[in-house]
Image (cartoon, rainbow, N blue to C red; front, top):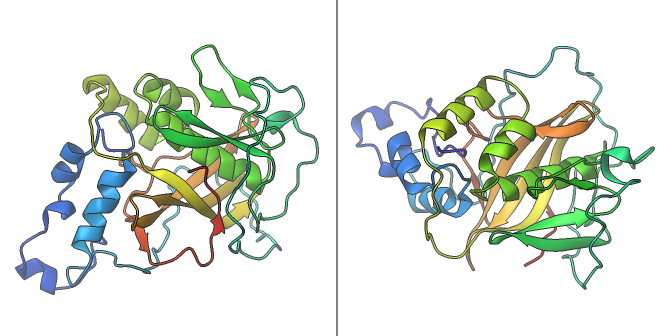
Amino acid sequence: MALFSGRSDPDDGDDDATSPSAPWENRGFIASAIVIGAVVVCVIVFLVVGGAGDNGQPGAGSTPTLTEPTDLPSDQPSDEPSEPAATPGDPTSGPVTPPPVNNAAGGCKAKNPDQRIPRVPPPAVSWQFDTDMLIPLQAQGGPASTDANGLRYCFAHSPTGAVLAAMVTLGQIRNPELTRTVLERRIAPGAGRTKALSENRTSPTLQKDVGAAPQFTGFKVIDYLPGRAIVALAVQVDFRSVASLPVTLLWQDGDWKVILQPDGSFNGAVAPDVLSSLDGYVRFGGA
């Protein structure tokens, strides 16, 4: 089950019709390279890096055009946030005491959380491994609840809460013991979740050695409304490659839920963007 799509823009031009398709443009190739039932960001990004060039694949520094999910409710507010876009901050540093596993006052239970777009790394964040990927934990922003199986949820109704929810959800869905639970409880209902659950049901969840695990290294809040957020997550693939992945979240049932595109992936037709630098991103990571 490929939860990240590596497809290029279908309107690349007439030249593509006569040139042979690169293997990374084929969804079957992408699916075979991905750990079934998990998000293996490094594989997708490696294929994009290798395919950057004249065939329409994104290259370093390219900017993806975001597409709105089809499953968003029609009554979302239309006013744009007044805060400026995120800018780089200092990398996360220094040990922090982990927040309580179940926090009665933070996350989705916090009253009047800060609604400003974060332009520096969220403070007092503890980074913990979930399988081989570090995920951020903050007493104020969340996650404020963890169930008996280790699923983390309950994030603050704020831009920072949306960023933390996106990172934790992507980190935990890579855990083969939590993949289906994440799909059922941390993904918003819709055609994308239905397709992903169907593929997960028919495909066994396997782990595969694909080298060093990807790690989060930054984020950018692209758009924020009280009921919806779009964030770009910067992921360190290896010592020289960083990719940006767009993730859309919906505020539903008192928590942030991630939206899957109709094809069952997080990004749909928006290919991961290979970054030449973290300019415009808040530097934020635990590695």
